Figure 1: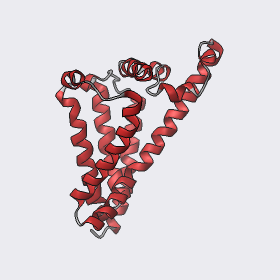
Figure 2: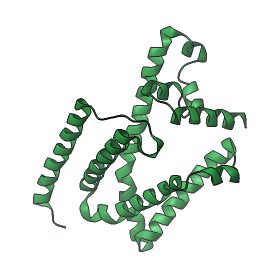
Figure 3: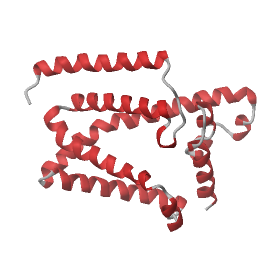
Figure 4: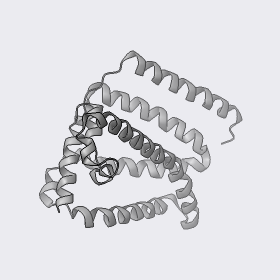
Length: 207
């Protein structure tokens, strides 16, 4: 229970953090980050900058691995859909496996959430389940017909634009991070690159 309480405290601090530095200092996974550097080093000003950089690299690599798995969701699930006969059952099986893994990790470490906690959670927060379900089902159906690269290209454009809007206006309780010139130029360059790639794919496409 002490681990769960510590995790909840760290999670609350992280989600309310107002800067990237604060995010790294209050990691969302304390047991993992505690293995990166001993606490004595974290308390030392001489090692703090090194810890922040190492934390950034670990989180970046973790994110890259998660991103690499995104196109594989649709690819693997489309194979499952062919086996079971339809994409809806395949998606249901995928989420059943995901739920089993999540419960196997969360229940021993943190226990079940109290009904009071579930009741005070904003209803909109549960919409994430609907969105990931829609994404997984869409990937399962579209990737075999559209191609993984094209699917992810359009997903990436939508993610960049949506993320920019959320940051710009601080939607859903997120910290406001207005677009500056460098971020705007980077966004335009990425979208333009994806558009050029898709124009080439469209000329060769046979849907």
